[in-house]
Figure 1: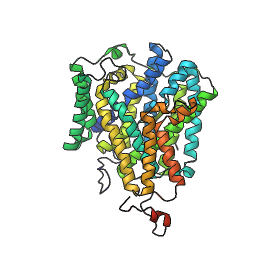
Figure 2: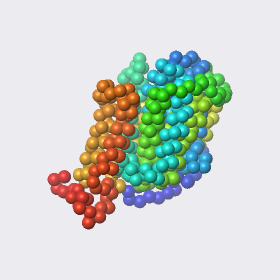
Figure 3: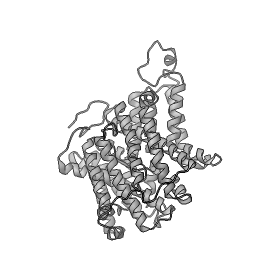
Figure 4: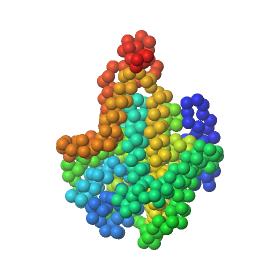
Length: 456
């Protein structure tokens, strides 16, 4: 196992280390258990908005699981320049839900998949291809703020799940809050007070105990398991492909959001080692976002991007092995091809999942803060950039109607907290004189004047 010093989180297994197979399988399942519900929820939401029947809805769910597994394997092991060789778990992002639902309802899923197919090739590949030129625009000050906002704006999602899920008849009930609290308490206590395998598996132990408790109380519905088929075969072009200008531009904007989230998530992962990702890791990770999303669109899968909840697991447990995430990818591929098994995971109650999400997204935000504190000086310049960027992102996250007077396309773009925080940090850091580095040159007059004083 890797030993770390000083500023780094204690790493139990480094990126290239391979734990014993039984432990690796459990750790891979831990990753799968926290991403499969929200990832498949996207398919359910869009299918409902598009008015699909049970058969087409099940197909979308299975493709979401299957290509999440494929994308995760590509990130862990790479295909040529595609993939980061980092423990990145992939899944369908909620950033695309609004556009896919509205476009699917008004224009049809053929327009959705046609737009995804083109946008996924154009935006991520341009971003990755030109990353050498763009890298200087993404120092730890910018990537750290992106990581922080990813964690912070997902906290309400964790609370909604903890209460039973939006629209649940028993939303906010004592039963839901009790299950979420049980999972949260077990995960935190195991992580803080136990050692070895029990600490590493704190998340899956919490979810397992919560799930068993939910079964005992009779709140788990096994109907999806009974109704699921044994085998699902990917079918290309099932929903067709059409192309319209406005939906295409909308998805291009959203893939920009996805690229910024991936940059933030990769930074959140390597923050456990006290570093930013390398150029090769950044470029490969962004390429994988686009390549798998484009291929998946051909088979009826929605866009795949890095899952922030799993970044939280890595920082929470100190397990960075990409081989463990690779096992999680194989599990997802199996679940995607065998719906009967995949349906078992989707029976996890929202409140059980919510208890785990709360601590994980909190860890994502904490890892972003750590990335800032280790790599930048808290002088007036940087604190103003932090305050402004987070204020914009959290402002949009909490009051989205503030943009209701803007054109629809502008609402889609600027209504994303990650975009607002990322753009704010990027623009301010680029154009405000001074440096975000803690290693200022004493001869630099701007840096010298920005050094913190007693009244700063």
